[in-house]
Amino acid sequence: MTDAIREYWDTQAKDFDQEADHGLRDPAVRRAWADLILPLIPGPGSDVADLGCGTGSLSLLLAEAGHRVRGLDLSARMVEAAQAKAARAAAAGGFPPQAAVDFLQGDASEPPYPPASCDVVLARHVVWALPDQDAALGRWARLLRGTGTMVLVEGLWGTGAGIPAQECRDLVLRHRRHADVVPLTDPALWGKEISDERYLILSRS
Image (cartoon, rainbow, N blue to C red; front, side, top):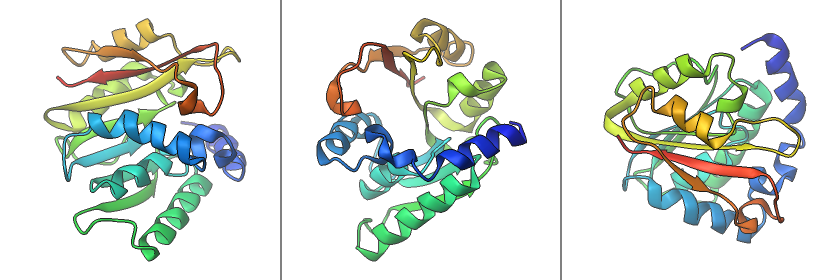
């Protein structure tokens, strides 16, 4: 990833959580994401890599459910916001004893984690922006221990940015045996009605 990309996301950090699905500040939106993501995570106590974690909203959701989460993001300001959220949640007693959450600045396309060190790789709105998607997905697959679980939330948005579901699934299948596409059409996830393509890819082997 280039310095220009990192600087762009640094500028987005201040207002990033104003989007309903980024900040999960609305209890209904937060509950919708919990209902979507948590049943997909083996547990309790899975090791999860949240790649391109932004301000850490999903990382904290998983940690509060008892998982051990490592969040990685290119933007130092995003990571600072995530760390501040984690500190507030910990001070409020928000994590079960077995849970952990840690945030690190780094390139999601080249995660600095050992092979076979994760039960789950999670990435939301990251694949579409990667300069070499195939190489990155290969690295992500190697992070998983055993068959592991890969959860990718992506879309082809009304702005024209994004990646079509079939293209994303085909990329995953270059490195994994199975990949299912789950449409994400529920307005509760986004805090509004949507008309573009939004989906989750689930790969458990």
